[in-house]
Each structure stands twice: as C-alpha cells, then as structure tokens.
Amino acid sequence: MTATAERTAVEVPKTMRASLLKKQGDVALENLAVPTVDDDQVLVQVAAVGVCGSDVHYYEHGRIGPYVVDHPLILGHELSGRIVAVGAGVDSSRVGQRVAVEPQRPCRVCDQCKHGRYNLCPSIEFYATPPIDGAFTEYVAIQADFAFPIPDSVSDEAAALIEPLSVGIWACQRAEIGPGSRVLIAGAGPIGIIAAQTARAFGATEVYISDISPDRLAFALEHGATHALDARTDSVEGLNVDAFIDASGAPQAVRSGILAVRPAGRVILVGLGADDVELPVSFIQNREIWLSGVFRYANTWPLGIQLVADGKVDLDVLVTGRFGLSEAEAALQAGKQPGQLKAVVYPGR
Image (cartoon, rainbow, N blue to C red):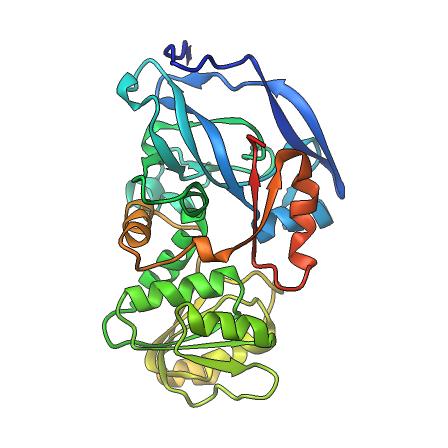
C-alpha cells in the first residue's frame, strides 16, 4: 500500500534526473518519476554517492555472478542525503534530517532475519543489484529505520562512505579484532584502507598492509597501517598475526595471507576475485584457523557514524574524484586514473 508523502518546506518535483546503465558500457541521463513512499519509508534527496567496485563491474561487464543487467538499471549504493518527505507511518519531524542510508531492504521475517543476520536474507533487495535501482539519481525511497541521522560534523561524502566503512566494521568484527591485535590486510584500495583504520579504532596495535602500488602503500601508512609490505617482494608468511583480512581478491594474496596467521587465528575474505581459489587446507586444519567470507553487513551504521564523528576513522581523505550526475560515466571510469581512490557523484550538480 502506498501512502501520500507529507508536505515539506521544499516542494518535491514529480520527476527527477537519473543516470541509467542501459546495457554494458552504455550510460545515459534520463528523467524518471520520483519514487512514491510506502507507509514505513522516507524520501531522501540524494547528496552524495560513492562509486563502488561493483558499480564499475556492472558497467564494464553487465553482470556480477547471477545478477545480470537485462534492463536499464540505476547504479550506486553508497549514499547520503536529506529527508524531504515521509510515509504515513513515519514521524513528520524527520523531514529535513541529514542521513546516511543503509541501502538494503530485508524481509524481516525469514530465519536469517530473525537471527539478526538480515544481510543473508534470501529475499533482500539491495540498491544497484538487478533488478533494484540504486542512487545515481536525485531521490530515493528507503525504510525509515535504514536512514540514519548524522551529526553536522560528518560531511555528505563521509556519510555516503559509511557503507564501505560498514564492510570494514563487519570484517573486523568477524575477525574478532580487539585491543592488542596484530592484523594483516591484503590490498590498499579503499576497503583495505578503511579496514586498516577500523582495526586501529578497534584497538589493533600492529596493522600490516600489502599491495603492489608504492603510492597506495604510502597512503595506507598515513591512514591506519603501521607496516607496509610490497606484495611483489615482501613475504608475509610466518608473521603469526591474529587475523588476516583479504581486500584484494587475488588468489596468491589469499593463500599467502592464510600462511601468515597464528594457530586459532582468523581469516576473513572480503575482496572479490576468482570463484575458486586453492587453499592450504592442511595448514588451516593443523592450526585450527577459522575462515569466513563477508557478505555486506548487519547493524553497523550506528557504530560507523560514531567512529567518523569521533575522528577515529577518516573517510573524507579517501575522496579523490568529484562528479556531477551527468558525469556518472566518467566517475565509473575514474578508478583507472593514477592516484584515484574514491570517486563521488553529486546528483544535485
């Protein structure tokens, strides 16, 4: 059932601009109807949207695993904005709030949801995952409790990047990182650097990070990591770290990282790479190493907002490219440029 949105100080238009992925490698700017809101939803005027590797993958390949772009799709799932209208069941005082959006809609009634693992809900609807549209547009609708108020001290860009920060938080939680932990992270891209900052915020005293880019390693040392390792020349085997987080997806990095873990340590696979990877099974067995994947996150936004507001994680420093909505295709291609870490699209521009 659709409810009539509350009136707002700013009149909400009937149409909005949206950047559509029409098919693989084909992006176009079009006018679409502004979403209506259900009783439990809010309408968010989008302020900033981070470009994720999955957006780039859909743009370049038209699919990720079983998810295929077979009709025009709005990309983008890392977002912030301002509530401009609410559904009938939402307190109208929320109009005007700046928010960070958790871009998913679980069913809330399945076994996984009831056990608090709503990220594993088989019926979940996730922004920019076919057939669900994302946030490269001027307005989006989301359940009210998945639009989290942010303090004035948190920028629109940082609020949008609470989404990748949530991946880092979820990985560190599953790795059981705490005060005094020693951690190895493979990959000094945005997720790797975010994971390094998060690990330090959780109390890790040593954070090793490996990559093949000297510039990214130098950046990581300034923002979370305590030791930088050149993946081409420096061996990580035998480090005996408490936890290894792979943010690279590189099969050799995964294998080497596992060999760096102490007995009863933890291995967390975050990076997207090959579907099948050869693992040192006897090493894992003999050391009783706990290995897990990461699939998005659950209940991470409040902590993420607090870490940013308290200055324990710096997300603004990751933003290296800024683009208007009409430049969304350039934003999707920005990662190929030297020195680029995180591109952000501003639908209001």
